[in-house]
Image (cartoon, rainbow over all chains, first blue to last red; front, side, top):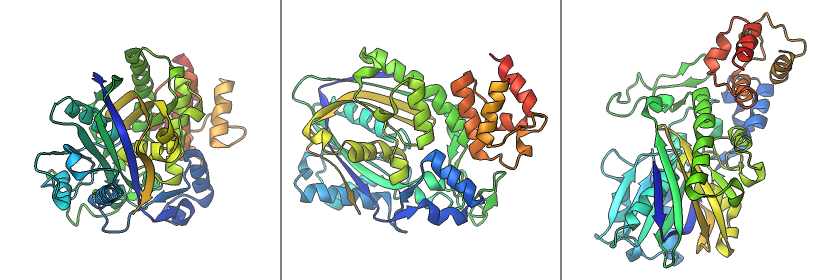
Length: 354
Length: 71
């Protein structure tokens, strides 16, 4: 599905990371791999360290810390927020919406639209597309898009398929109307037949958490996890990404009537270094134009990886200037989405710790 | 065939690969090797397989023949 948006911009990106950084080496003993194999895994996937929230810290806590920072530093006015989007798979409650809780916490105006969106790896693109659609309304001039996930609470530490690559993080992206003409191209695709390729089986209404679902079970590859934990069919996801993402990006080029060389930076979701290198090669894009260093430094926090990638790798570059970005997210759902737009002259683009 | 075999040897980090064996007969075989095989199939042979399929071939030789027959 193709989207076209006019006269809208991103005006600031703030990434909020946990203070605690855990090294891959310090967790090797949890895995059923020999140290040699673990080091091979580290090298291939680009694992070094990842940020893990303190026990009890939630996605909401990180979003509130980020908004507080923006308010206190006069980077955002409370009354200017016309819509508050919270994109996450680790909400505070089943009900109410986490975005409503945050609105209440800060005493934001009642004339606001709060909306929670359940999305993971493509959560930044889905959130941005939603924000752009809202901005088509005359009453909405500024949207605060929050992406947050605390996956460490749901991934087994003895699962070397998932634990070494995940991280916790949140981001706040300010999206608003632009006083001058510009054009944004985007597309999005879904395939629910692969919905369980990345899944947390227990904890919803179909399979509530019980002592039984909490039982740790060993899989064929020697990973231990329970039904309360996230489970990922690594090879199915890998094949899905290599099959669907390159044609999606090619299609985005056609939509925008550009070539791959027109793009300054390919800011993609960060599953791991291995997959990103494969993607860059398949798209015939220089690997240097597609940063792949987020998993090794911070971990993959699903929908937060693209803003983290932008804040970390393009920080001042997008404050002092402007670049053409091709952004893409792909994963849980299955959902895959991409956006081509110029991003720059941001009033802030940085990482803070909480 | 030889080219494909040497690629498999590289992934498994073994010399003198016994192609009558299954992938899973090798102690070196693990999820990372499996993923590397999938990546190699995609980039060099434009073939998509699942990890399970790769591991289920009765021998590496049969696997190689299957890959080449799809060319």
